[in-house]
Length: 215
Image 1 (cartoon, one colour):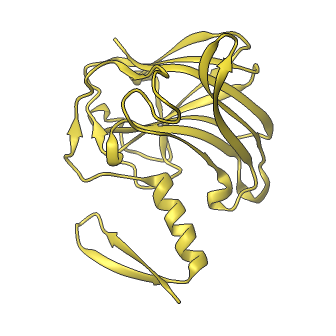
Image 2 (cartoon, one colour):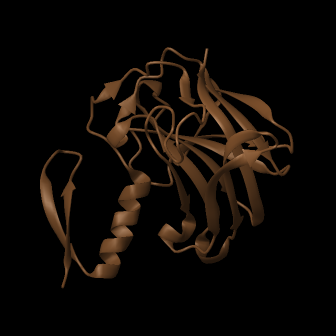
């Protein structure tokens, strides 16, 4: 039996797509990674805190959920896990995995939406994002997504090294670099933050102990 997916185009006209089960699952995964919200549905965050790990995992302090994604949703073979545990004396969201470049893959990611239902937030009151991290000495990326991005591979990016000690790393919005998009970063339409092991074959082990907007 074919499945059906209800799709709304950028012009607002809905249509039904019929597909077999395998195509249905692939498209569902694409929608999960790409996400989106209706244009204009933005809100201002009530505080600078995005997650201080004060709630039961995987729920963040703002009520959205941490999720783990790998390139398997696009045919890759990387593997990854996400757990809540104590790392060097403090609670953390910990991402582990093996990044593989086989089958055009190459990423493991943990990500958090900034508002329920994938809606956007207006982060223009802040200068950037601070991340508390503990890692294995490897280089990772922090990726932002906004409502302006329509493809799952598009983002705004910065890289950082996660040393085996707790550090707070600041990321100014002005320093994010667009990746495979010509749209400028519009922080009034910010939707998702991802912490990513990407681009080369290596073993990822990264803990996030807190994340907040930066004054």
